[in-house]
Image (cartoon, rainbow, N blue to C red; front, side, top):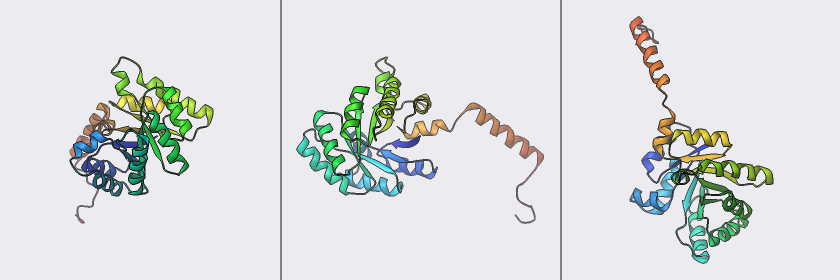
Length: 223
């Protein structure tokens, strides 16, 4: 499963990229607004920080003609850009148009397998199934992810299932179990994946034993 970081903060993108495990970045209007810089400037900086990565940048209009104009502009900025589109009627129409033009799309705000079916039939590159926001309603958000993965596999759609609204490491584990293709998450969730109490205590013991023995990897004569 590929890992995307969900942010508009270029410093967070660079930090995740340094670990060598980052496959892409997702942004949205809220994240871009929080970044406090220009949209195009921010997106291009992110592309530069993640060479070869898939970078989602979202249209903000809700009517088809304006959405198409925005999508063509955004997609022209850099070959790594995927146009992010909300799951509304004009959005699905836009995805179909962009698919015919060979422009990658990420359909966002998907909460049910029925919605995912519409995105897949329109030719979406990614279907962003939101999990955390559904969990907030006391409904199992991961159920729709499992259903969408099965739907894509059953009917042979080219779309990939992207798990979004990831709130904690368990969501990542569940996304892997569901067979999702991508999970996008805040930097803090990626950082949490590194940690386990047994990892921390094990490393502490290893280093204590090493230091107690007075050992060194390097020959003291050459240090």
